[in-house]
Image (tube, rainbow, N blue to C red; front, side, top):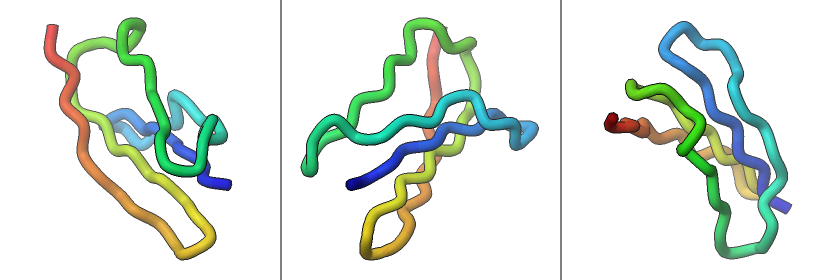
Length: 56
């Protein structure tokens, strides 16, 4: 099962949760401050790391 972790620009973990399904994972951004975040998704095949920008 995949797991998604979100980090702020300082590298602090702000969210960590298991994926609800095998093909999709949702990260609610309504409570997140505007800015850049790093999202790390871990699966049985390795990691995927992407940048996420939350706009005001």
